Length: 101
Length: 361
Image 1: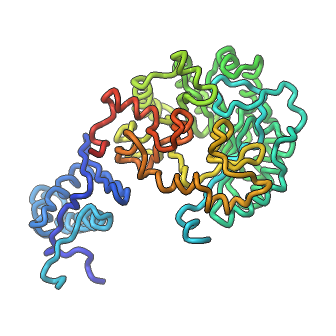
Image 2: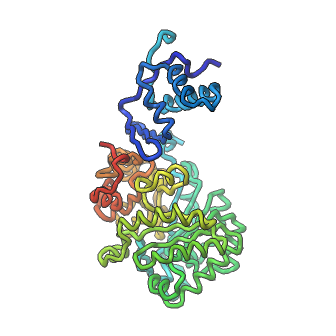
Image 3: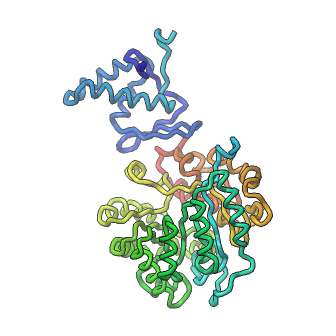
């Protein structure tokens, strides 16, 4: 089965969605669909790295650097699952890349 | 099921089986008729044959749950027939009662018919305070006996506590009682400014907003870990703590999937139709509930407006798709509009106490 997200994919934040920080993380809310998701502080860091320029691979590398005590394979898997959920709820958008054309 | 019905299935009916009650509760939003001698059935109450037709029809458009309430449901002579019929139709049945008429035979019927939950109103462990609030001398012992029979009889039992200023100190006592009796949950509803509850607000007997929040956090931070009882404090999700939102199942009114049937067969939004007759949509004796559900203009407008056209803070809250403006019946009762903000959240916003992080700019 083809991977849903590839390391070369770039993701950007859907600017129509609302990002609201609270004490232990943040809510993402889409006023059109009503989609609402709470993300913890780690999730907030990852979400904020999705600027349309960094690739999924870049983001994963940055997180691995900061969490040396967790296996890099595990981090990579967790990040892809997390980002996939945000893309599916349309809080993130996949930027068009070479392999899409 | 048509596409329109598939989008808005009628999942639940609030069934007000009688408008009679053997108590005179000071806060009641339904304002039922008090009857000392409640032996006879009231001729104005719907006939079971019409209910059967309505239930059969409603099942076609999604019905799977009925909340049996009143008045006091056990005043109806054919209440057992109603419960047995609903069970035979594979409907999940919840019952709200004041508990005073519950006896061993009734408990047996409830068990035999797999009633999902029975909620008993109890707001104080002090007979005098309870009876003053419930308006009838001697009813405390009856209610406690009913509650005890239900809990001991293996029925999933809930205590519903109506909260006002003078019974705040009873909260922990009722949690403790629930824990000791094996009552599964305690639902605490702050009194609402509708029906007879209006007087509480006029006399400043309701719990003030700041105290509601303090009580909510006290329950979350202390009582839930101290007692093995599920406690639901009924304030809107937008006012709940982040921890509570993330970890607990919250009560939310599924107003877009509910309809009410009043004791005379009137089809209404919920019990609000008892006092706000403009929200009535027909009668099960003459109208097809499927037709009402599909085409009634009040319901059609509600589907367009909730949550998209909620007004005030409710329209700007990030939880509006989940909360749907809390109690729309209360909003209507206060303002005459189903779109107006819920009064507790409105007050919080006006006082600058509604969290900025939950407001859409």
